[in-house]
Length: 231
Image (cartoon, rainbow, N blue to C red; front, side, top):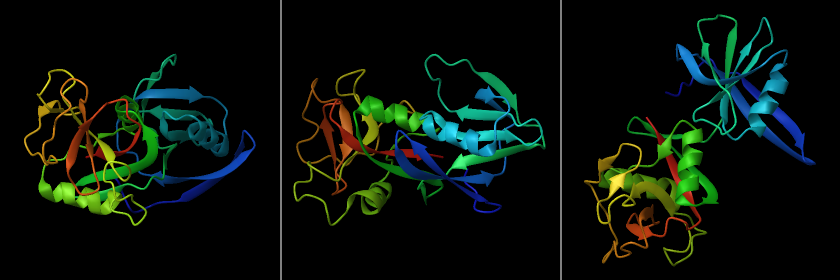
C-alpha cells in the first residue's frame, strides 16, 4: 500500500480564513488502473490543485496531468452533491500526489491515530474518507501494540475512561449483544473487555479502546479520538 521510494516532497503554505498552515504531499507511484471517484478541474497549477485538495476533507490525493494541466481530486467515498467520473490512470503524463499522514505499520496493516473528537459515526466517515476503516482488533498482540503506540502517554488522566482512549469499529448496533466489526461485518472473536463489561445493553452500543488495552461499551454519540486502519 505505502511505498518509501521515489518520493518528492511538496509543502504548501496556505492562507485560508486568515490562518496559515503547511500541508505536505508526496509524489508516489500510480497503483490503480482507474480511479472511480474523481472530480476534474481544467487549467490548474499543481499548487492550485494541492490547495483545492487540502481544503476538501474528502480529498486524500490528486492526479495532475502535466500536459493539459487538468487537476483530478480523488475521493474514497461519495461526497453529497458531487458528480464523479472514472479516470483512467493509463497516462504517462499523470503525476500522483498523496497527503502525508502519520500512518504507522504493524503486521502488514497501517494505522492512523486521529487526535480529534468525533462520535462513532463521524469517526467511521472520517476513516472512510482516508480509504480506511475504524480499527478492527483481532489479537492480544495487536491490542497491546495499539495501546503502546497511541494511547499510553504521560499526559493521560489516571481515570482510564476520561482520556487516552479511542473508537474501534466494534459495535452491536444491529442486534443487541451481537458484536460485529463494522468494516468486515464479521463477528468479533477475540475480545478484551474490562471486568463486568459490556454492560450498557441498548444504551451503549459502540466499543472504545482504553489506555490499558481493555475494551468498554459506550454511547455511540460520545466524542472520542479514533484509530483508522488500512490493509
